[in-house]
Length: 210
Image (spheres, helix red, strand yellow):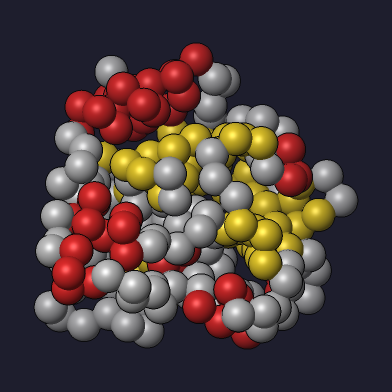
């Protein structure tokens, strides 16, 4: 674990579901960030003890980044999981093959096992503003109190530097996502904190979105 700047901690962890057939690197990133009187864990996995003892909430950039959220026993703020209609739109699957099915992502939280707050783009608690990435439930969080963004898979580094990733989505193109995220360049962003990859700075964001 390292302190990126005062009140912002980053640590990489091997993802338990990773294997050599995965296209993304084994190590994923998590963050602990002081936001006012709160210590919020972002996409947490293998949280260091000193942060776990102080943490007050969890924020997920995407529902499939639940990682260790369940076992932490904290209030969870997250985008909603995909519906079967989302799968049809995003991936072009045959609706007759998935009609009525439910995602496994956060199924336990939707069933009431834990305190869950489901949110989309817009204003979030802790002074956060959420921007839609490749979809409305893969988000980029703007944290004005520290001049930083925390990004989900839409804007991550899977081994070749920070970039836009569609993850097989068919309903959107790279240029669409770049256009959607370009307003970020109007913000005084100093740090980019991706869920995959190392923390980086504004220059990397400008390269991707310009």
